[in-house]
Image: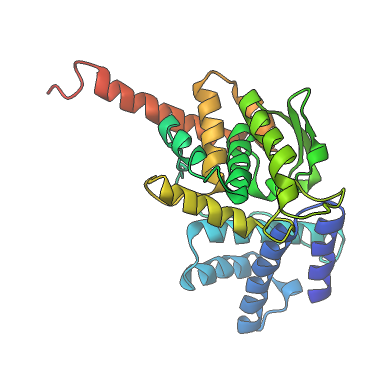
Length: 298
């Protein structure tokens, strides 16, 4: 069955274009299932519904969170569905496998004052500060994922039309408008700063480079945003996704419709985008509670 595992993961990588990061997460989920079957001496191709229920209990006993368990069971459902479709097994035991109910998680969102603070946090007198300013402006202007940001090339930006092209999950292409201020910051970085990172920049090099003139990593982006969040004295730990969440929430607060925000974020399911409406509703309730003269009257 380990051969089937590798075959499935390879099909996800090649045919569906999933990222290495996603494939790695799926591999860990399947390794957890293999650990369970080894412990119980139950071959993978003999598992039934009761065995998978015991697997869910096994995950809880080893301390996995509800969110992690839900992710692992989602992977297991997909894997067994593929095994059944490919006729490697005669019955799909995971067809009715339920995931635990996950409490609604509202992501952290920066207000406009905090956005201004973090955009102004890098030192404009240094090449790293100028690069990081461009990174922060682009993240907030477009809402791109950090995995998308590090792969953007200068040729992906149409400065005349004010559009950037990114490749999201499954290598799906989408076009995102970029406002004039962010384009101006990007133009300045490209014309005056980027060439300071390496003398001869390859034509296919990414937009943002590290000190050695190489492609930036996801971890490097996370670290610099965490650092600027601290220097801007923003409460809590922020990440690239904080700027993505802020982008989506501020668009909805400004009157954008949910479908447009879904397209801009690259969500395949509208349910994922609807999360941001809860943030807007929460803010409305807070404003109402503060503003209405009868609130607090008993």
